[in-house]
Every structure is written in C-alpha cells, then in structure tokens.
View 1 (tube, rainbow, N blue to C red):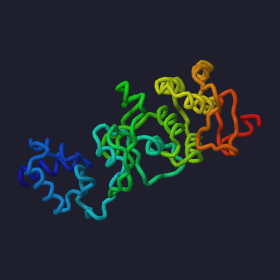
View 2 (cartoon, one colour):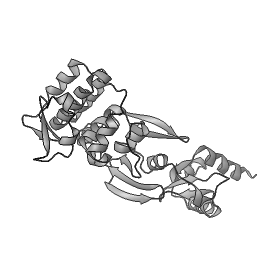
View 3 (cartoon, one colour):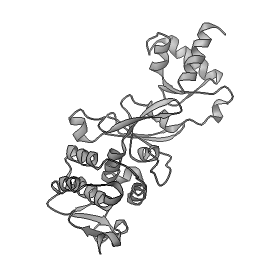
View 4 (tube, rainbow, N blue to C red):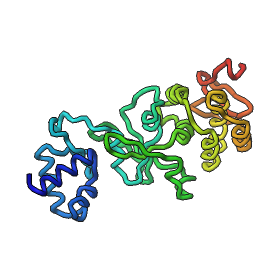
Length: 270
C-alpha cells in the first residue's frame, strides 16, 4: 500500500463520519483546495466514502457497498454544524428515556433555522434559547457521548427535560414528552432550577415546578428547589404542553393549565 493510500485508510478507519475540513487538515491542505475536491471525488467514485451533505462524509466499511451502508444519524447530524448540540427528542433518545424512536434529528445551532432531508433522514436545526445566546452560554448543561467512534455533543438530562417541557412540539407533542419523562430515573433537580432561572421564563417555572413536584419522591426533589421555582411563577395562569381553553386542568399552586390527559388525578387530588 502506497503511503498516501495508507494515510487515507487510517483516516477513514479513525473517522466514521467527518467533514471536508477535517479530511483536508489530515493531509495538510486548506479545506477549499482543489486537490481535496479531487481526492473526495475519487473516494466517492470508489465507494470508500458516502456523502452525507455538501461538507460531510461517512466512511464506508470495506465489507459493505456504499448504497447498503446505514449511517448513524446522530453521528452524522453532529458534524453538520460546528456549534451543533443534539437536543430535544434526539437527546431523549441518546439518554435512553425516549418513549418512541423518531426519524428526525434535532440539532441546536445558532445558524439558520430549517429542516433538511439527508441520507440518514431529516434534520431540524433549532436556535438555542435567546437567554443562552445573549449570555454566551449556548453550551450550558451539555455533555458528550460516543457514537460509533464519533464524539457528539448532547444536552444534559436536566436541560433536555426543561427544553421538551418548553417546546413539546419538537419532541413529538405533550403525550410523547410526558411518557418519555416518566422514564427519567436520575437527574439533579438543582440544575433544573438553575437552568429555569437562567432562561428567566415564568411559564417554564410553572411547568417545570409542576413536573418536579410530581416526581418529587422518585428524584429526591427538595423543598428548596420547589421554593426557587415558586418564586418565579407568573402572576396569571399559563397554558402549557399544548393545552387549550375548554380542554385544560388548572393545577395549583403552579398556576399552570395542563392538557386533561396530562393530569394524574390521584396526584393532583381532582
């Protein structure tokens, strides 16, 4: 094997999914160099790599044909934008607490908000909360995981819980969210309160407080955490989780109006 071939094989072995810039850097070339384009075209024709997007590629294992290869959607999506963090339902899946499996991947990124169809399925780009962007804390409560040799960034369980309660439409709707959150076995309630305070969203304090109180025994939620959230409640009642007038139940003291099916009668005492 020629030195260049050996170097390419080593790179592809170590990078199941990679960007054009990463490939170029491995060979000491600028990302936009013409010879990088030629090399990538050669390996695409040879079936050594498969295109994920304009700038992202996946290495094809030697024993597989490119058209039969299944790309790990989370690993692939994580490479689409340099600031990308897997969140919402994708984070539920990665943490093992999703009630259902989705084909769409959600990636939190400061770039353009859009939904694109890619070889591994759809990817929806979601803007980070304004409070995080404004304070330069877009990576707040994130962690890393390994996906088939690719390090991906994902929102931590505590942030994921708050995010899906805030925007259930990005996680399959209220029923999917609540069934998924019933699968949470561990989180740090203090971090949930910290995140809600950072976002400074009173409606979110309501629904997060309601959920934490409901899970109080299972998750070891303290009086202090609940008091912090109660201190941030809105002055008026708020509809959450898609609740609508005439089809909602008011839960006190949280001043939150929930969909009828979301309320556990035994817990709420109604």
